[in-house]
Image (cartoon, rainbow, N blue to C red; front, side, top):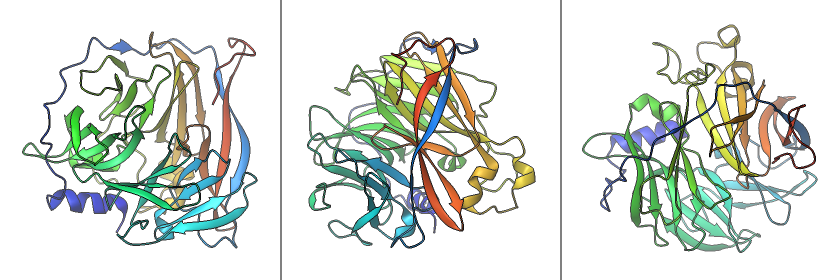
Length: 372
């Protein structure tokens, strides 16, 4: 069973709880439109490192989560490793594993997003156990928080408390919704931020990415379009900013009738990141020749044959498009938000290719160009 199938099964069985806290926030202020003017810059990706070798005691996997720690090590979370998380050094050499499969302390069924704690610890979201585990840099379990009120796909820790901002899917009397919640240190929902009813097909095409900007505001992608909302970190008010675009390359869906769930349409916003006051957005889009490259049920490692990535850099205050680049791989941003990575099959071994990202072009000033 895939993670997607497990999410749908949980929702169908009523395993996701209806929110019982304060009411949803009111509509945000007037949206800022993303400019359609050609950008002055492009995004340059420079390969920095590769992870994954044939003799590693685990695999990079098909769609891993990767995070660089404060000690410059890399943590790889992949469902193919049955709850084990892989640790690599700064040069890409395998070091050790920690974790294990199960539901006990320090065990995982589907380890997902890994974030950094301010104290050097690691925070690991288990998508199917629906909890966040805090571990030391060496993998020792420090704390486990149940977040069972939400089928979370992404989270960011609150800066001033023990709680979290979570985004994913919830259920209720009106059916499936895409939501963003504030959760306290014990896992109880404190406030609901964004909440939108969605069709069931959206589960396969919405990754609910979150990021914190340079002003401390929490941003979330919204389903059904190229839309983003920001809240103050107190998390108990309406959105303070909305950013909306309708780029010609973005397919809002739904997927074509009869298309397999692995088909690359509609477009999927995969990752968000803030640097230098600018918002970096990573979106998966269909390759122009994807139908020629896909079978009726394409293998997951064929992602790079059917998907491209559009990476845009935007000024969220004005909506100015700073840079855009289309890259012929399925890329994401690491959990520490410092690097971009993709997975490439090399001699039947999945390898993670990590890139640094910077802006280049005659319209970009040097040396203070925003970069990741």
